[in-house]
Length: 219
Image (tube, rainbow, N blue to C red):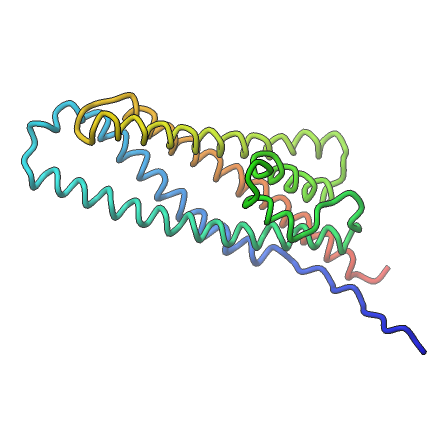
């Protein structure tokens, strides 16, 4: 009886998906920049807020609330498109170069949800995607430093945001506190991390686009 064989699926060009990723995360950068400006402005005028009238404070609260809702919505959309891009590019690495020493495509996304491992495994998975796409030459290693810079920016942003929220809650929404200064910094690091992440996957998507085109060209 003949064995049932199944052809390995062809790699999928990630460049079109990167186009959507650039749009969504570009919008996220715009909103993060607005949040940075807004929280910086609040920190500068916080000492004067006790003299403001109810309508002025209420208007500011509404602006903050709607801005945060938009920020959260774009954050979720960015997570979805980033997960798709990570899965697709890792899957392509397996199809183009083999899975030797590489994380499974599903795990390259799932690591983000595993407590403890989500502090170290996501950048390692992205680094595997990078190495599988560009190799381990000196130039590729040097450019891969952006992966660790992205991850450090993300961790610092999260830590600063959590600390600032705790300090603001302790002091109250009107009284000035150190949290007012840390909050804009958290958005600054979030912007830097998002820009770095886009740059990393722009290179990966373009690199895999070329690899797929070469593999499809008859020798």
